[in-house]
Image 1 (cartoon, one colour):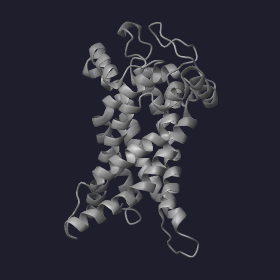
Image 2: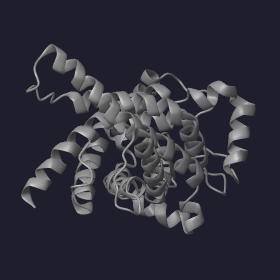
Image 3: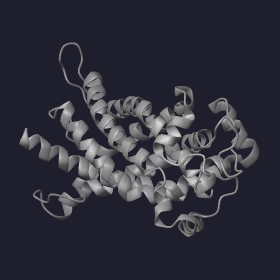
Image 4: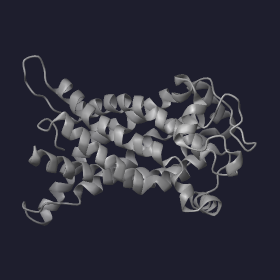
Length: 302
Protein backbone atom coordinates (compact mmCIF):
# COMPACT_ATOMS: atom_id res chain seq x y z
CA UNK A 1 0.00 0.00 0.00
CA UNK A 2 1.17 3.59 -0.48
CA UNK A 3 2.29 4.72 2.93
CA UNK A 4 5.01 6.98 4.20
CA UNK A 5 5.54 9.16 1.14
CA UNK A 6 2.02 10.52 0.92
CA UNK A 7 0.74 13.22 3.21
CA UNK A 8 -1.66 12.95 6.10
CA UNK A 9 -4.13 15.08 4.07
CA UNK A 10 -3.90 12.77 1.06
CA UNK A 11 -4.64 9.72 3.20
CA UNK A 12 -7.58 11.43 4.90
CA UNK A 13 -9.07 12.68 1.61
CA UNK A 14 -8.63 9.33 -0.16
CA UNK A 15 -10.12 7.49 2.78
CA UNK A 16 -13.10 9.83 2.98
CA UNK A 17 -13.96 9.34 -0.69
CA UNK A 18 -13.58 5.56 -0.42
CA UNK A 19 -15.74 5.45 2.72
CA UNK A 20 -18.65 7.36 1.19
CA UNK A 21 -18.71 5.21 -1.95
CA UNK A 22 -18.45 1.98 0.05
CA UNK A 23 -21.34 2.95 2.35
CA UNK A 24 -23.64 3.95 -0.51
CA UNK A 25 -23.09 0.55 -2.14
CA UNK A 26 -23.29 -1.71 0.94
CA UNK A 27 -25.91 0.04 3.11
CA UNK A 28 -28.66 -2.57 2.41
CA UNK A 29 -26.43 -5.32 3.86
CA UNK A 30 -25.68 -3.15 6.90
CA UNK A 31 -29.37 -2.54 7.60
CA UNK A 32 -30.26 -6.21 7.15
CA UNK A 33 -27.43 -7.25 9.47
CA UNK A 34 -28.47 -4.80 12.18
CA UNK A 35 -32.13 -5.90 12.06
CA UNK A 36 -31.05 -9.54 12.46
CA UNK A 37 -28.78 -8.75 15.39
CA UNK A 38 -31.50 -6.83 17.25
CA UNK A 39 -34.01 -9.71 17.10
CA UNK A 40 -34.01 -12.67 19.49
CA UNK A 41 -34.77 -15.29 16.82
CA UNK A 42 -33.96 -13.59 13.52
CA UNK A 43 -35.07 -14.87 10.14
CA UNK A 44 -32.55 -15.62 7.41
CA UNK A 45 -30.79 -12.80 5.60
CA UNK A 46 -33.07 -13.15 2.55
CA UNK A 47 -36.28 -13.22 4.60
CA UNK A 48 -35.15 -10.27 6.69
CA UNK A 49 -34.31 -8.27 3.58
CA UNK A 50 -37.67 -9.19 2.02
CA UNK A 51 -39.47 -8.09 5.18
CA UNK A 52 -37.67 -4.74 5.15
CA UNK A 53 -38.61 -4.22 1.50
CA UNK A 54 -42.27 -5.11 2.06
CA UNK A 55 -42.46 -2.83 5.10
CA UNK A 56 -40.63 0.28 3.88
CA UNK A 57 -39.60 -0.40 0.29
CA UNK A 58 -36.10 0.41 -0.99
CA UNK A 59 -36.02 3.39 1.38
CA UNK A 60 -36.09 1.00 4.34
CA UNK A 61 -32.62 -0.28 3.50
CA UNK A 62 -31.27 3.24 3.90
CA UNK A 63 -32.63 4.05 7.34
CA UNK A 64 -29.80 5.84 9.13
CA UNK A 65 -27.89 6.56 5.88
CA UNK A 66 -26.93 10.17 6.81
CA UNK A 67 -25.31 8.91 10.02
CA UNK A 68 -23.59 6.13 8.10
CA UNK A 69 -22.22 8.54 5.47
CA UNK A 70 -20.85 10.82 8.17
CA UNK A 71 -19.43 7.78 9.92
CA UNK A 72 -17.93 6.22 6.78
CA UNK A 73 -16.28 9.34 5.40
CA UNK A 74 -14.80 10.13 8.79
CA UNK A 75 -13.86 6.63 9.88
CA UNK A 76 -11.96 5.66 6.74
CA UNK A 77 -10.24 9.05 6.66
CA UNK A 78 -9.25 8.62 10.32
CA UNK A 79 -8.31 4.97 9.75
CA UNK A 80 -5.83 5.52 6.94
CA UNK A 81 -4.38 8.77 8.25
CA UNK A 82 -3.97 7.39 11.79
CA UNK A 83 -2.60 4.15 10.39
CA UNK A 84 0.10 6.15 8.63
CA UNK A 85 0.90 8.00 11.85
CA UNK A 86 1.08 4.86 14.02
CA UNK A 87 2.96 2.93 11.35
CA UNK A 88 5.66 5.60 11.15
CA UNK A 89 5.77 5.75 14.93
CA UNK A 90 6.28 2.00 15.33
CA UNK A 91 8.64 1.43 12.43
CA UNK A 92 11.08 4.32 12.88
CA UNK A 93 13.41 4.13 15.86
CA UNK A 94 15.33 6.92 17.61
CA UNK A 95 18.33 6.55 15.32
CA UNK A 96 16.18 7.09 12.25
CA UNK A 97 16.42 3.50 11.06
CA UNK A 98 13.31 2.15 9.36
CA UNK A 99 11.98 -1.29 10.32
CA UNK A 100 8.95 -2.80 8.63
CA UNK A 101 6.99 -6.00 9.27
CA UNK A 102 3.48 -7.36 8.99
CA UNK A 103 3.23 -7.51 12.78
CA UNK A 104 3.98 -3.79 13.08
CA UNK A 105 1.45 -3.06 10.34
CA UNK A 106 -1.12 -5.08 12.27
CA UNK A 107 -0.30 -3.25 15.51
CA UNK A 108 -0.61 0.11 13.77
CA UNK A 109 -3.97 -1.05 12.39
CA UNK A 110 -5.21 -2.07 15.86
CA UNK A 111 -4.36 1.39 17.20
CA UNK A 112 -5.95 3.10 14.19
CA UNK A 113 -9.12 1.00 14.56
CA UNK A 114 -9.42 1.82 18.26
CA UNK A 115 -8.84 5.52 17.51
CA UNK A 116 -11.52 5.66 14.83
CA UNK A 117 -14.03 4.25 17.33
CA UNK A 118 -14.20 7.69 18.93
CA UNK A 119 -15.77 8.88 15.66
CA UNK A 120 -17.70 5.74 14.80
CA UNK A 121 -19.57 5.05 18.05
CA UNK A 122 -21.96 8.04 17.97
CA UNK A 123 -22.74 7.44 14.28
CA UNK A 124 -23.39 3.73 14.84
CA UNK A 125 -25.60 4.53 17.83
CA UNK A 126 -27.74 6.91 15.76
CA UNK A 127 -27.94 4.48 12.85
CA UNK A 128 -28.91 1.54 15.07
CA UNK A 129 -31.68 3.49 16.80
CA UNK A 130 -33.09 4.52 13.42
CA UNK A 131 -33.08 0.87 12.30
CA UNK A 132 -35.15 -0.07 15.40
CA UNK A 133 -37.96 2.06 13.91
CA UNK A 134 -38.30 0.05 10.69
CA UNK A 135 -41.41 -1.83 11.82
CA UNK A 136 -42.92 1.08 13.73
CA UNK A 137 -45.70 3.17 12.10
CA UNK A 138 -44.39 6.62 11.19
CA UNK A 139 -46.69 8.48 13.60
CA UNK A 140 -45.43 6.32 16.49
CA UNK A 141 -41.72 6.49 15.70
CA UNK A 142 -39.57 7.80 18.53
CA UNK A 143 -36.53 8.43 16.31
CA UNK A 144 -37.63 10.06 13.05
CA UNK A 145 -34.37 11.51 11.69
CA UNK A 146 -30.68 11.86 12.42
CA UNK A 147 -31.01 15.17 14.25
CA UNK A 148 -34.21 14.18 16.06
CA UNK A 149 -32.50 11.03 17.33
CA UNK A 150 -29.51 13.04 18.50
CA UNK A 151 -31.78 15.44 20.42
CA UNK A 152 -33.60 12.51 22.02
CA UNK A 153 -30.37 11.05 23.38
CA UNK A 154 -29.47 14.38 25.06
CA UNK A 155 -26.27 13.38 26.88
CA UNK A 156 -22.84 12.22 25.58
CA UNK A 157 -23.10 9.08 27.72
CA UNK A 158 -26.19 8.02 25.74
CA UNK A 159 -24.48 8.81 22.43
CA UNK A 160 -21.39 6.76 23.32
CA UNK A 161 -23.23 3.60 24.38
CA UNK A 162 -21.31 0.57 23.09
CA UNK A 163 -17.94 2.31 22.79
CA UNK A 164 -15.92 -0.60 24.26
CA UNK A 165 -17.22 -3.35 21.94
CA UNK A 166 -16.94 -0.92 19.02
CA UNK A 167 -13.29 -0.24 19.87
CA UNK A 168 -12.58 -3.96 20.25
CA UNK A 169 -14.36 -4.79 16.99
CA UNK A 170 -12.56 -2.09 15.03
CA UNK A 171 -9.19 -2.75 16.59
CA UNK A 172 -9.38 -6.44 15.65
CA UNK A 173 -10.85 -5.76 12.21
CA UNK A 174 -8.57 -2.94 11.10
CA UNK A 175 -5.47 -4.54 12.63
CA UNK A 176 -6.24 -7.80 10.86
CA UNK A 177 -6.79 -6.05 7.53
CA UNK A 178 -3.50 -4.19 7.56
CA UNK A 179 -1.71 -7.31 8.81
CA UNK A 180 -3.06 -9.45 5.96
CA UNK A 181 -3.52 -7.05 3.05
CA UNK A 182 0.05 -6.59 1.83
CA UNK A 183 0.83 -10.30 2.34
CA UNK A 184 -2.21 -11.23 0.28
CA UNK A 185 -1.33 -8.73 -2.43
CA UNK A 186 2.30 -9.88 -2.63
CA UNK A 187 1.22 -13.52 -2.89
CA UNK A 188 -1.28 -12.70 -5.62
CA UNK A 189 1.30 -10.65 -7.52
CA UNK A 190 3.74 -13.57 -7.37
CA UNK A 191 1.13 -15.93 -8.81
CA UNK A 192 0.19 -13.58 -11.66
CA UNK A 193 3.87 -12.87 -12.43
CA UNK A 194 4.40 -16.62 -12.90
CA UNK A 195 1.44 -16.82 -15.26
CA UNK A 196 1.93 -13.57 -17.18
CA UNK A 197 5.00 -11.31 -17.13
CA UNK A 198 6.35 -8.64 -14.83
CA UNK A 199 4.53 -5.87 -16.72
CA UNK A 200 1.06 -7.17 -15.78
CA UNK A 201 -0.54 -4.41 -13.71
CA UNK A 202 -2.96 -6.61 -11.73
CA UNK A 203 -5.65 -3.92 -11.52
CA UNK A 204 -8.02 -6.33 -9.76
CA UNK A 205 -5.59 -7.34 -7.01
CA UNK A 206 -6.75 -4.65 -4.58
CA UNK A 207 -10.38 -5.73 -5.11
CA UNK A 208 -9.63 -9.40 -4.49
CA UNK A 209 -7.36 -8.80 -1.51
CA UNK A 210 -9.75 -6.28 0.01
CA UNK A 211 -12.57 -8.80 -0.24
CA UNK A 212 -10.44 -11.55 1.33
CA UNK A 213 -9.26 -9.48 4.30
CA UNK A 214 -12.81 -8.20 4.78
CA UNK A 215 -14.16 -11.74 5.07
CA UNK A 216 -11.37 -12.90 7.39
CA UNK A 217 -11.66 -9.95 9.79
CA UNK A 218 -15.47 -10.11 9.80
CA UNK A 219 -15.27 -13.59 11.31
CA UNK A 220 -12.69 -12.38 13.83
CA UNK A 221 -14.74 -9.39 15.02
CA UNK A 222 -18.27 -10.87 14.82
CA UNK A 223 -18.89 -11.30 18.60
CA UNK A 224 -17.95 -7.69 19.36
CA UNK A 225 -20.25 -6.47 16.57
CA UNK A 226 -23.26 -8.39 17.95
CA UNK A 227 -22.63 -7.01 21.46
CA UNK A 228 -22.30 -3.50 20.02
CA UNK A 229 -25.61 -3.71 18.14
CA UNK A 230 -27.47 -5.09 21.17
CA UNK A 231 -26.21 -2.27 23.38
CA UNK A 232 -26.80 0.49 20.85
CA UNK A 233 -30.34 -0.59 19.98
CA UNK A 234 -31.61 0.23 23.50
CA UNK A 235 -32.63 3.33 25.43
CA UNK A 236 -32.94 3.81 29.17
CA UNK A 237 -36.71 4.23 29.22
CA UNK A 238 -37.06 0.81 27.53
CA UNK A 239 -39.59 2.12 25.01
CA UNK A 240 -38.31 2.60 21.47
CA UNK A 241 -41.68 3.67 20.09
CA UNK A 242 -44.64 1.73 18.82
CA UNK A 243 -44.71 -0.52 21.86
CA UNK A 244 -41.37 -2.22 21.11
CA UNK A 245 -38.66 -2.28 23.73
CA UNK A 246 -35.04 -3.19 24.17
CA UNK A 247 -33.32 -3.92 27.48
CA UNK A 248 -30.74 -1.26 28.36
CA UNK A 249 -27.43 -2.86 29.33
CA UNK A 250 -25.28 -1.18 31.94
CA UNK A 251 -22.03 -2.67 30.63
CA UNK A 252 -20.52 -4.72 27.80
CA UNK A 253 -20.05 -7.65 30.18
CA UNK A 254 -23.73 -7.60 31.20
CA UNK A 255 -24.75 -7.59 27.53
CA UNK A 256 -22.35 -10.44 26.71
CA UNK A 257 -23.57 -12.69 29.53
CA UNK A 258 -27.19 -11.91 28.62
CA UNK A 259 -26.63 -13.03 25.01
CA UNK A 260 -24.92 -16.25 26.14
CA UNK A 261 -27.69 -17.04 28.65
CA UNK A 262 -30.56 -16.44 26.21
CA UNK A 263 -29.08 -17.39 22.85
CA UNK A 264 -25.87 -19.32 23.50
CA UNK A 265 -22.74 -19.31 21.36
CA UNK A 266 -24.79 -19.29 18.17
CA UNK A 267 -26.41 -16.00 19.18
CA UNK A 268 -23.10 -14.21 19.46
CA UNK A 269 -21.34 -15.87 16.53
CA UNK A 270 -23.92 -16.07 13.74
CA UNK A 271 -26.56 -13.32 14.09
CA UNK A 272 -26.40 -11.17 10.98
CA UNK A 273 -23.21 -12.90 9.87
CA UNK A 274 -24.20 -13.60 6.24
CA UNK A 275 -25.22 -10.00 5.58
CA UNK A 276 -22.16 -8.73 7.43
CA UNK A 277 -19.82 -10.94 5.39
CA UNK A 278 -21.26 -9.59 2.15
CA UNK A 279 -21.29 -6.02 3.42
CA UNK A 280 -17.71 -5.97 4.69
CA UNK A 281 -16.22 -8.24 2.03
CA UNK A 282 -17.60 -6.07 -0.79
CA UNK A 283 -17.00 -2.91 1.22
CA UNK A 284 -13.30 -3.59 1.83
CA UNK A 285 -12.82 -4.49 -1.82
CA UNK A 286 -14.24 -1.08 -2.73
CA UNK A 287 -12.38 0.80 0.01
CA UNK A 288 -8.89 -0.57 -0.67
CA UNK A 289 -9.28 -0.26 -4.44
CA UNK A 290 -10.65 3.28 -4.43
CA UNK A 291 -8.29 4.41 -1.66
CA UNK A 292 -5.23 3.30 -3.60
CA UNK A 293 -6.37 4.89 -6.86
CA UNK A 294 -7.49 8.19 -5.30
CA UNK A 295 -4.35 8.35 -3.15
CA UNK A 296 -2.13 7.85 -6.22
CA UNK A 297 -4.09 10.47 -8.18
CA UNK A 298 -3.90 12.89 -5.25
CA UNK A 299 -0.14 12.34 -4.91
CA UNK A 300 0.40 13.18 -8.60
CA UNK A 301 -1.49 16.47 -8.38
CA UNK A 302 0.12 17.97 -5.23
